[in-house]
Image 1 (tube, rainbow, N blue to C red):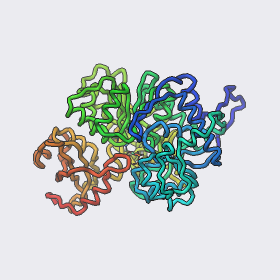
Image 2 (tube, helix red, strand yellow):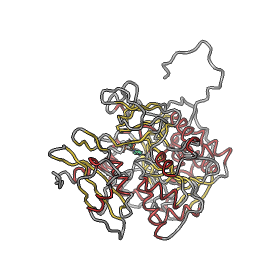
Image 3 (cartoon, rainbow, N blue to C red):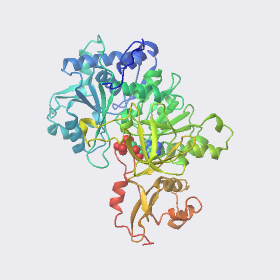
Image 4 (cartoon, helix red, strand yellow):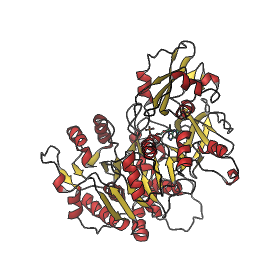
Length: 550
Ligand code: ADP
C-alpha cells in the first residue's frame, strides 16, 4: 500500500493496525456500564450499555460467519439510529466485511441501483422499511438474504421476501465467543453513497484506518469535543455519512449514546433530550427548525443540552443566535462531505477572540470554521492558481487528507483528484486566521453578468426576518444579466410579510446588485434524502419564472 521511502532506521513502536473493532472493545472494557438508550421502531425505549452492545455485536459477527460472510463482502443496512444498527456497525466492519449504509429516503429504484452496484450480500432493515424491501427484492438478485431487525413474531407471514430472517433469532442462536480478526488497517470498512443530486450516486469507501483517524480528529476540543461526560444524541442519521462518525467517536470517548429512532419531530426530540439528559447533538439545519418551533410554541427550555454541531448545509446565523442566546446552546458550525468521512472544518473561537463583542464573535462563528488537524485546504481559481487568504477572495475549495477519498468505489467517475487534491465543488473564502466560509456550491452560484452572487448570504438575510421560516435562492434566466437571484421563502405559521417588505429588509445588508429580483412565497421547500433543500428541483420548477426586471 505504502509507496513512501523507508528510512534505514525505523521507529520501534508496535505496529498495531487501527481497526474499528478496537473501539467497541475499548468501550466495553473501560466504559462498559455507560449507557446506550434507543427509542425503538417498536415504540418503546430500550436501554443497555457498551458491554452488552459488544456482546451482542459478537453474536451477530458469529451469525455472519455462519452465513458465509467473508472479509471484504458488502452488507447493507436500511435503518434508523438505534442500538441494533450500532451492533451491525461493529459486527460487520469488525468481521472485516464492509458496512454499506443505505439512505432509505432515496427512491426504491435508486436503492436497488446502489445495492446492486455495491454487490451487497445481505441486507439488514428496520421494520419501517419493509415496503422498500418488498419493492426492491425482485430487482436485487445478488442479495442472498434479508435480516429484519426485530423479534421473530414481527416477521411478515406472506413469504414474499426471499430468505427472510429475524435479527433477534440470529442473536439468540449464536454465541458471544468471537475474536475480532486482525487484518490490514487499510482494508475497506464501510461504504456510503453520495446523495446523487446530479447523476447516479457514487460510493465513498472508507477504511478502518481512515475511520479511526477521523474519530480521533473529530473528538478534539475544537472539533465535536465528545467526552465521557457527554450524553450524545446524533439526530444526523447513521445512514448519512455514518452519523458524522458519532457511532465511532462516542465509544472511543465513552460517551453515553442516545438514539432517537424514527421519531425526529420537535416534541419527540425534546422529550428524549430532557429524559436522557442530552448534552450534545448533531444535525442538519432543517431538523433544528422542528425542535426550535416546538420549544418556542410551548415556552420550554433545555435543562442539560449545551452544545450542538450543525452542518450538511449552511447554518443560518439567525438559528445559531437563537440557540446561543435564547437557549444557551453553543453551536459549532461544521463543514464536510461524504467524500471526507465527513468532517473537514469546525467553527470555534481562539483565545485572542475573548474580548470581542458578541456580534464580532458571531461573525466568526457563522463561518464554516477551521480545518481539523489532518485536513489540508486551499482555494484556487479556474486555472488552478492558489488564491489569497484574505476573507474576501473566493475560489474553488480543494482538500486533502487521510480520511478524504482518492477515488470513488469501483473507480466510478475516473480520476477525481486535481494534482493530488480533492475538488469539493464548493466555493469559499479563507481569512487571514484560516477560517473558511462557504459562499456557495459551485453549481448553485448565481452568475449575474459574469459576476457571482452567493446564495447562502441571501438566504441567511431572508431567514433573519422574523416572519420567515425557510428560504432558498436560485438563479433564473435574465435577458440582460444571464441570471438573477429569485428568492423562494416559506413564512412562519401565522406570520405575515409582503414581497416588498421582504425585499426592503435586504437594504444595507448585502451589496445592491445582489438584491433578489423577485420573491415567491411557497408552502414548503423540497428536501433531498439528507434533509437539504433541493435547488436543482427548484431551478427546474421555476425555470419559466418571469422576473419583473426582465
Ligand atoms: P451530497 O454531496 O451527497 O449532497 P454531502 O452530505 O456529502 O452530501 O454534502 C456535502 C456538501 O454539503 C458540501 O460539499 C457542501 O456543499 C454542503 N455543506 C456541508 N456542510 C456545509 C456547511 N456547514 N455550510 C454550507 N454547506 C455545507
